[in-house]
Length: 181
Image (cartoon, rainbow, N blue to C red; front, side, top):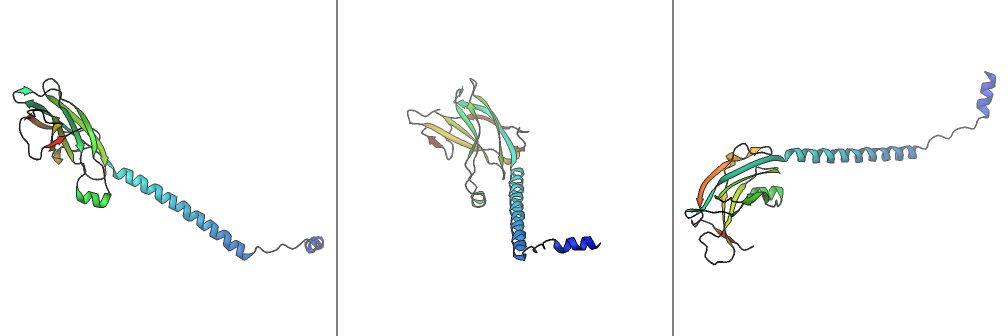
């Protein structure tokens, strides 16, 4: 026991750890923990936002006529038009999304389907670009029809297809426009 006490007496004394360094070390550790928590919160927010963006699908079918003849080769498009002012205020500007496009067949028939991921309910619009009963005017006549919300389904494939029926493109539709492109 005496030897041990002697060795202890010869050994250099340890300097105590400076308190200010200990506080600084704890502060740096706390900053690291806060930074990690911020990254975790950001990651959870992004994942939550992605899950909130639900996939919705819609479809439209029908036949286009020009008088008593089928309107063959007419360009048709299915859009999600985002023009609700309430959505614009809260979500910012959301551009319109093209869901599907195509041309009518030789009999004037068409079938369009599409889906989109969006936070709010999509606003599907069916558009027809044609030259029926148009004469020599520049561009094409553009007609659009809103598809009822009841035909929007959850998921990537529409469960119900909206049958717009037979449309005679000689009709002058309200709010008809011209597409000059």
